[in-house]
Length: 137
Image 1: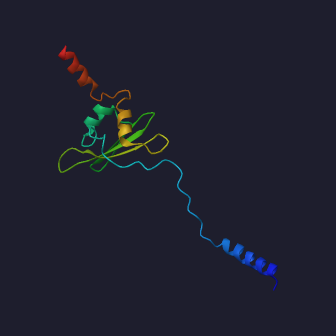
Image 2: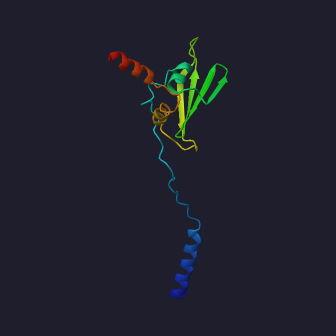
């Protein structure tokens, strides 16, 4: 065999085996995962339905399933689902929150809570602050 033929055979075999190589994984494109923490949620976790309504205004959805309840609050910035479950004979209270942007994209839950306290119909404690400031004068 000539040297040129040997090189041609080697290239042909090498090229044929290249198609058998495992595909390289591509990194996921999009937003990074948001860590799941309860920081910034202190005024929501543990609230009952009346407390949420006082904080955010009337819910946009109120879904009941057995003794559990989901209240949904929306703004142009985000959608917040608050899941309320009873403990013993007590009234259902928020034990879990889920937040997303209106298009379904991920958003930090605390940022959503902050945005919703600014929506129309939410008192978020402003009434109490105003009356405290007024009575101090």
